[in-house]
Length: 199
Image (cartoon, rainbow, N blue to C red; front, side, top):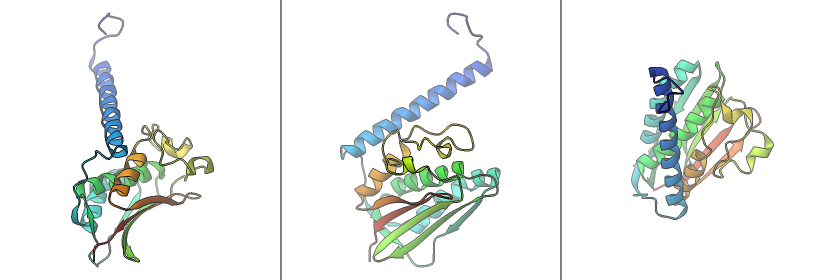
């Protein structure tokens, strides 16, 4: 554009703006992951009612699910589910998992989000009826830049992320003494977050 090769129209400027947004997000994600790996990420643990965090995060993504023709089910249970964590960080993890599930699920499919207490642990589960993951992706899905090179990663909207979301999620959950794992991948995927529950 500066050299006059491309016209400076609203269409071209919008493309530039979108690329700048992508690069900014990549830079922020890399910074977050680097801090998490070095133990410098502010975690700020306090007693958090996970059911409220999960319900709010899922609720923010419901319009996206509705637009895509996907049934988004949220079951947070009736009993309190308290863990020592940062509500914003856990919301970031849950939002990432649900967003991935929605991108991987075709129209007419479903994404189920549940909360439960199992053996002294708070468990958050995100299950989808999407395309699943290929076996080659399973062992490295939580590694940085691993998007799952299968068709799942590219998603319904054509482009996947940069493969940092799950790596960041893994380290955030570990910072609160928990774990995140992939349980099923043949006909869809089920991710489970497990955190020590407060009595």
